[in-house]
Image (cartoon, rainbow, N blue to C red):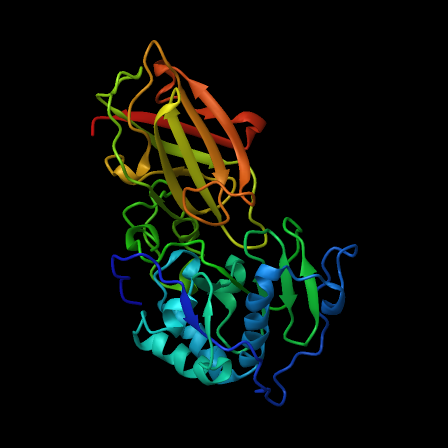
Amino acid sequence: YAAPPPRRRAYALIVALAAMACSESGQLPTEPVSPLNPTTEAAISSVEIPANATRLVALGRALRTAMLSQPTRTSIAAGLDYSPYVEWRIPLSRVLDGRDNDGAAIGIRSQLADRLGQSATVAMPELELYLPFADQRRAWDGSSAVDIAARFPGSDDGVLIGADGQERRIVGGERFVPNRPMFVLARSEVDYTDFESAVRGGKRTGIYANMSPIISRRFEAYQECQEDCGDGGGSGGVGGGNGFPGNTSQHTRIYDWYLQEDHDFPWGLNEIEFFGAIGTHFQECARHTGIAEDGWYTVTDIYDFNNTVATAMADSTVNFFLHAYEDDQDACEVTSSDDDLGTANFGPSGYGQRYSTTGDHLIFSVIGVTP
């Protein structure tokens, strides 16, 4: 994929929501879809689809039908292989509307344009397509049928659209692994217009120490952490003194962190937003995506403003305050679907020390950097 241009994401996607018949003899597996939680397992007729998810679910059904075709699956597999993005994601909106236009994107578009159609312009946010389970990402080569998990916008719930025609409710947090490769179709959590915070190994990617970039999806087992360690972003802006307490000669920047538990299962890796302030002023937000549980992450560039969580430092008169969230949508905006990862506060002696947030969801440290 070519580097996205430096512009705000578009919100138009040309798709049709009617499923096209394109089954192939011998392509449909006969085994049932892996059961989810027995108390929530239900046919689609009894699963309530939120009003804001009806178009996305319809698109998921059309995509499921399209991917019964071997050529379609081959083109999607090539798209994964060539994707430079975290979790080898395919920015589906960008591919279908032509903003991404390399060979892999053209192949996907040629397969899906007729099957999904271009008869309707649907106003909906950017969409992405990806395999959230690392072992499935490594193994899937396009030869086997797949399930589609359509995630409800602004929710941890969704619907599993099986290759065999079965559909089941997915309740966020349920621990299950489907018996077929499961693609997630969802509103984009990655901002593909911000290339350095979207690609694996980007400038604002938090990584484990001593890891080198992965070259191929097929070999990610050797350097899995680099793929799983995600990327970061944040909002801009520089605070001034304005008479507020705090050391304005330096900024407070996130340095490292450890997520104690997964907050985005089964939808893939986590996106963490760090909101900071000195007292109630000098507020900033740093955002890192592609974060797995149980691993230390360290920023790659402490001089990058996007790692700033406050445009000043604590001093003897005022503390630094941090509030962290696992983000589900809208970068550096707290929404009702975001998971609260807790708070922490400390004075200047706490810089360079590791602290746990309330509830022990997250361990982190910050440092002071002269801007």
